[in-house]
Length: 137
Length: 422
Image 1: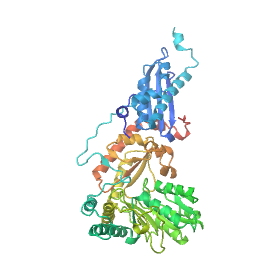
Image 2: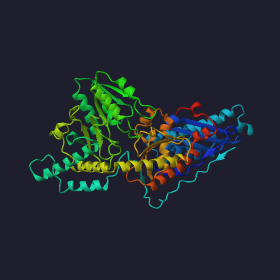
Image 3: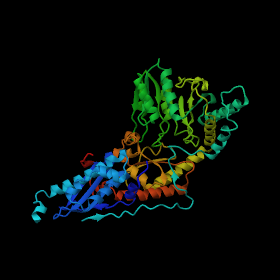
Image 4: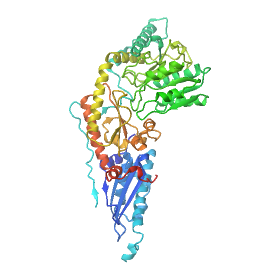
């Protein structure tokens, strides 16, 4: 199977590889997939509590080249967006950007799931606090 | 605390002196035609183009002579007689002819067939089809090392068993089955024994008399011959075995396989067998040396690398290993100047990880992480070293990228994690 140039670029030069402190309150961690399925993505976001803007994102992925590229691209896209804006990212946009073939669509779905899981984790951690954007007003 | 992982960009690799890229190390998939084989084939495309079935002119006689010479050479390599060799289009056809042909021929005697779960699809899917026609098939499990348990086989046999079909060497893990003992059990019970020896013939000694084989599939392109030609050995005495044809027509190959003979291909298969007869002992030793060098160089530089299948009962050129925490297709992508195969689901049409590895009890996670190396006649020591080094550096790079590797290093038991399903 031939890979698109963008997939190869993300595979060869993955963006934002690494880990953030999962115990920090301003960090949300999403861990999706399963080793038995051949895909596991860990995507982390660091959110500014004042603005709800994602200031940093890191990932690590066990999976094929398309899975690595999808998660690498996801970290690029979430950075600088607010939580709500990041939730708008659709897997179909990832498919389009990376020209993923039909058998690799599940990689993009997993990347979208990873973003949602990371945001969900961050929200859960910060649920007991007053909505920070409101509080800042 | 946040950690950044610096993954050095994948570089375009420059071939070291004496190595031509890409390197072919997938010799279980197919092999290049040996130049000596090609040389013998070429005249049969042009000057000696005749139909081997043309009995009344020299064009036919010359072609027939080429075919009969090939038949002798094949028979010699496997300890058979020339009349016991039937030419086919390849091992898939040979497997079909053997299994369907025996099933049809012996249906008055019984309807039970025994095979193993790690067989090639050409055998498994043929057996599945026969199940639709009223045959009963037992699929034997294999042990952790990939070998069939002879006691399981004994227990599976009953008075309706007409055929046992077990491969000589496995195409993924290279494991050699105890063919001689299986054949003995079959002969004691008057059951026909077929062996798919596609990967074994020309690589390890095969002797149909000593190993009690009644019917055996052979392919040319796995042993430095051309694609599209193979053979089926069918025993003529002690006991005499018969197979019903599956292709009807002009009655070629004594009625067992109609169709004009692929004369150049058959000549090529014959030459490939002649070379193997001469060179196998030395070549097997050489390949095992290269294989062990590859294994030691990889395993000496990486932890958590697991060999799939028995190292003791194995083809000399085969190495099948799993690299924990690294997915196979991404590893293949990283070593893109080396041609090997993976048992990962992502590389298969079915999106299922290798059924052979699963049958050994290898977890799905490790099946996804497996790579099959098939070292062949034309690989060199320098190539092996290059491949080993590329594998090591790519696995290291991908482990830095792997959340599973990070979790394992943190002491988390991956089996205890409740994974969110996709």
